[in-house]
Length: 443
Image (cartoon, rainbow, N blue to C red; front, top):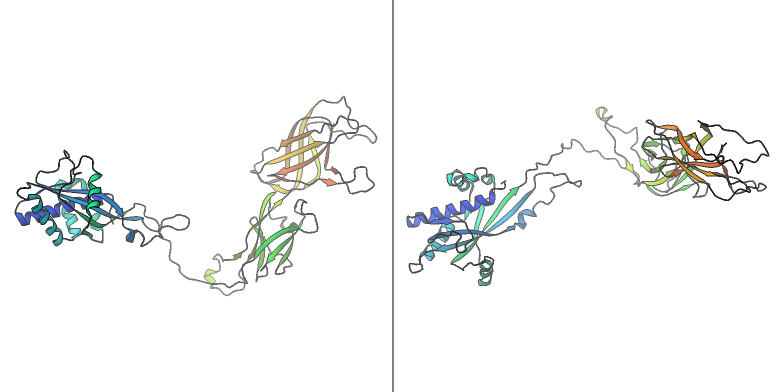
């Protein structure tokens, strides 16, 4: 393949071939230039000018192998571009002596005898001291020869070529096409290791998860580690069916082809974290299949379903612990908050969750003060961020400031997934169907 000097090497070699051919015919070497044929450009009074007026992609070469890259964009092999070079050969001389026409005839005869530019011709050009600036050209390494073909241009086509050159006067000319020059990129690409063996495993069909519902509860109820999920779909039964959540897989105890009921408590020790979770059904190959001993440690392929997402919410465990301030439980019958008691409080609140919190997760404590009867109805809401921790933990501490004494409902939010309030379900209670916990008393 050839590098960036290929086009210039073809032009220089074409000039050398034409000059040597005419010298063998007439005994004298004509002047050869490679300039734009306009007045004052330096074209010869008697000689030939070879002007590269157009370069076009060679469709046949460029479409021969379009798969140069893998789906991720990696090169399989070096990229390359095939080009066709279009030259205008213009002839100069004394019109009375028909010198221009004689030069044209000699040039055409030369190119009839030499319809190809070969690797040996390119090497002679690179060895010529006059073309030392082309010494690094790799065009001689191109396998395909460069074919020279005269172009049959109509008068209008020839006129358009000359009209592109301002102040140019049309001269006796002929056009040739050099087909083709293959320029290659520098990026080598890479080659994968060959496949040693092919093994097949026939499964029962790809499992498909259509939806995941909260079994026995309202679909608006938060999903926690104690929830039971109903997974609906098809093709669930396999020789070894497992459920994958996050990076952990388990074998569910009961499976039908269209439904699996999953108690999330089975993942208690799996290190799940609050937030959006990805759930999949996976068919693994049978463990007792026959396989060569030296290949038993190789990874097996499996058949995976589509992934479906659900939000796993944290759950508050036990009572919140207050430190750094005084806590006093109000006595029965006492008014819990004096209207005059407006001094702000500050301190730490430590809460234990049923699920681990990663250091990278954003954890918030949201507190809503309970309005006491007779107090101005101004709902107080406060949000505090957890202290930074370096390892996964189920216990988080929140520094709190500017809290008025009183009773607060609180919940914890981890990456947008919130813990659940408890609701009073006692029909005889004065707080029936209201949030009643969990609570904190700030005194």
